Image (cartoon, rainbow, N blue to C red; front, side):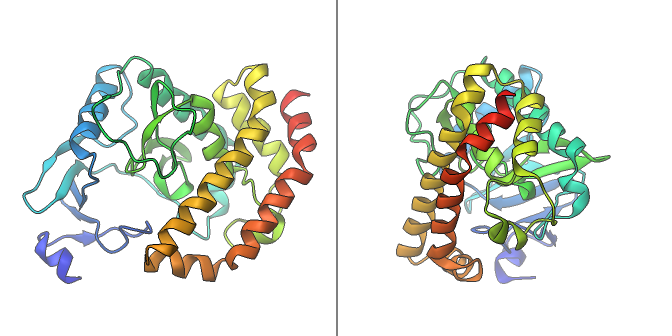
Length: 272
């Protein structure tokens, strides 16, 4: 156990994450982790989601004096990279779309606190009326019996359009990566256009939203690249290491070109 873990009390370290790797511990029925600066507003929002029928997010328990948050532990399986085949099945993908739709439907009934300075790192530049998760990667989804049951790590949540959250999710789950980039983290043989259609169908995107989705995915990719660049420039060792391990800026250039080259293919798959 790390010194930080010992300070948080005896517990079992939970694997995964980038910024908070090594700093998240389970203590019985609770999880303790570094609290985001929006924790108070975020906890109120998560509790309000439950009042509107969404139980697929951690239940906030409180904050500690030393800047950590306590959440109820969510049992289940969280796929970590390299992502296992079971998590990349079409039924698993479809369940992610259903879970995201449930989050957005409940979120539409919950007012976003306008006084909170929500993180802009991965936020929709157009803004919006719901609180988007913005980071629905496989290692932020809890599965039970092969189906997505809950989302964790709302640290980057910010107001935005539902379509923005779908596009962010598609980046991780189709995945919207060129084959060389995808091979480092995903099982071989995933059909990105077909999987994009599965996500759109399971979420229930309208025809207009389907037509817009490929361009929004390209925009989310640029936002994510800028996010990594800021973290690296600020001296974040985790993101600097990840950038090198995953191919550097050449990888991001390759992804950008691949998305543009296949834009019509993705549009056809979504609208056919």
